[in-house]
Image (tube, rainbow, N blue to C red; front, side, top):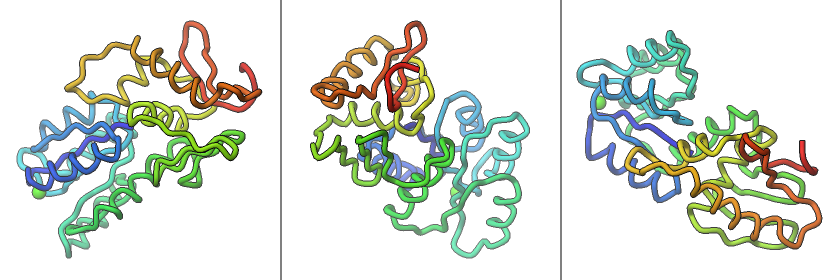
Length: 226
Ligand code: CA
């Protein structure tokens, strides 16, 4: 999953970026409001972390502009400790959640997972498809009783498919949500990783869960075919 962080305190932005990358997210960071709005409107992110006080354009203005331009990416506001008014304004402008600085990184992760789940109307941090269990908090993956060890890239692709389960996702969409702007996109690499995933998740099981939709992409779902 891909996250944009818009935060002008570079140290904080970079700490968050690094922490999220360690969790397997791809992350793009913007350090002022204009750059942030540009990213929000041009990068297919799954969540945006948005500071309110920003140079060039403040967070509320960014959010207003995004929503006016019909960009529905979930937004988590970062607010100063006692800026109650900012929280209210933020939520009224169309923010999905907020977090008060300073915050615990674990809480940020948990709140991000809630927002990531919302798009696919997924209720639990453990996403299940038939007997496949993907724990999005711990990254543990099980099929039946079998624990499955995945590389971070394999996990990221499986997680993206899981958040979008029962929906066909294209190769381009997968690459755009798994890699950040520093990566040279090559959608063939998706096929390679899907093969690795099939070997680990479907091989030896009667019911296949990863399906290829010819000319379109992939879908993670129970049952065979569409
Ligand atoms: Ca700030």
